Image 1 (cartoon, rainbow, N blue to C red):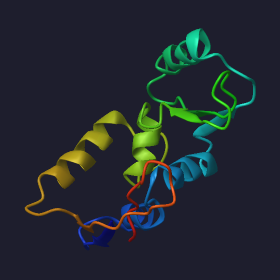
Image 2 (cartoon, one colour; image 1 turned 120 degrees about the horizontal axis):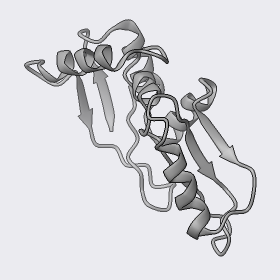
Image 3 (cartoon, one colour; image 1 turned 60 degrees about the horizontal axis):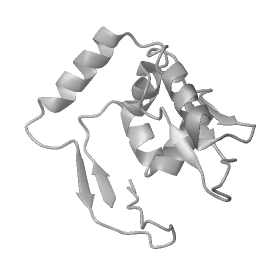
Image 4 (cartoon, rainbow, N blue to C red; image 1 turned 180 degrees about the vertical axis):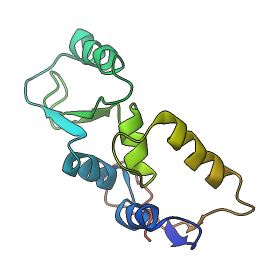
Length: 139
């Protein structure tokens, strides 16, 4: 997908929109902002991954995204969880600073929601290189 960014967005929000065009980009962006960790040990699908997911939900303000690269029984597969599971991750996605209050995030979303037209225009552009055919947003 190609995104054409309109001028209503803040400078920081435009910078994030230009930088983040897919899940992989967002995970890299979270990692640069210390909001993404890669689990170093081999995990079992049950109960290990579900236990980590439950623990991650306990801190809804600060918990990072978590990537599992070593999953027993699934060689070469990866799982990302809690990507949008904390307000800090949401703040970064919206072009705000980590630690932005929930109230401020609410008003940022309301301001964008109430726009008469979309703040980003998209044109479909499929990237066939991934196994599930992701759609990339190109700003």
